[in-house]
Image: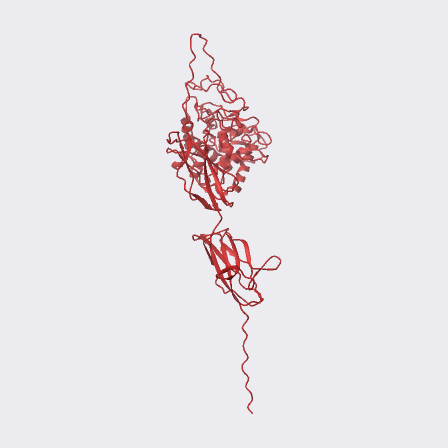
Length: 584
């Protein structure tokens, strides 16, 4: 009976708040306390205030399944799943290919972004809530769903309003966007977040390997550590900005952590209840050219509630069918009410919002961030507008987290602040372009400059005298340490030259020398670099027959210079004592 609780919670007249109450009730009855990772559960934890402030999401805040995990926690079982699941436990099982995709995505993220600590159970929880594990694992051998999974069109009629951003390339709808695939990405997000998880050369939102890997990178994009509850909350809310969604996903995460089992593809159960009050409604399999139409739109849900009005059936491509005129020839059809302009519709242009000069050394984080302001034609700020920042051109500079695209919503002042930039090793200028998502206005370009790694100070690591006899070998090698503003300067380019004098830095042609690969004497070494500790150890030095004091000069990028004295002297010999002539 308890296991059926989530499926029986039909929503009818109930709103999403009912799901929240049910989650709270289940939380109390399960009394999970602290999980085996030492973190509080979502019902007990209080996410940080900014966690719910995100106004962007992977799904466009599309509807999701609200079924709750069974009250009885599953026991871990062999992953082979040789026989059918016991009655009442199929909702705990994860289809084999879907489960494999989640685990492969976890492995890939552990290698690419080990500090994120992404657990596959989080991907499984989101996949359960978004599509019922790809509609019970209805995927082919390559992981592609047997038919596309599409959410309802986001036309503002009970959902967010997101006008078409992909010309129907992913969702088959050239009027409005729809969430696509088992992880329910909207096209504008998939465009930059999409990944090729099964190495077939394509990024397909309807392929579970591609979608799971993309979801992993999306959740890890801001250097969040998902082993920290606050960061985990932020990541989940960035996927779908709803407190009820956060609580529900966390319930499934906790459930899957306690154990699950693998079931054959195509045998999983499809959840019954949805946050848009349409039990069993989209996302559902459909062809891109035939958007899904709710069945029995006039049939009331269980209980005494009246049915909610549903959107009109849609034409292929997302347009609504034209209403038939009334049969009474004397009446005049009432035109449909016009849709008020959205915040995005009112944006006329983007303005720089006081971005400072963007400069960083290779490998360092930029200390300044890009700020862009969305404005109307009259120059008024426009809040709640999504601004996409894209790093363009050939560069290895990224946003913190390794992505080259970030989408940020403008605040009440119309300002969107991009994530911090992380300089790569390629030096030169980097262009970051700001554009408005869902609105065709001129982009705004920012230039960031990556300079070569530099040092402002050099010092020897030892103080032993550097001496040698003519034609011999110096016993001690020269080692220096480079710093920049007191910190270790790693990867800094350097040169070492045996110079003629303190006033003449050209290379000398006599005295100490290094040897090249062929054993020939060289007195200038280029393309040197300090190691991860800022250290540079020069090769052995040798001496020719010249004696005296010689100078070795080390220079680094950034202007740091160090001059070291080398002494070549013949060994001292003892003089014989004067002889005494015998007396006559």
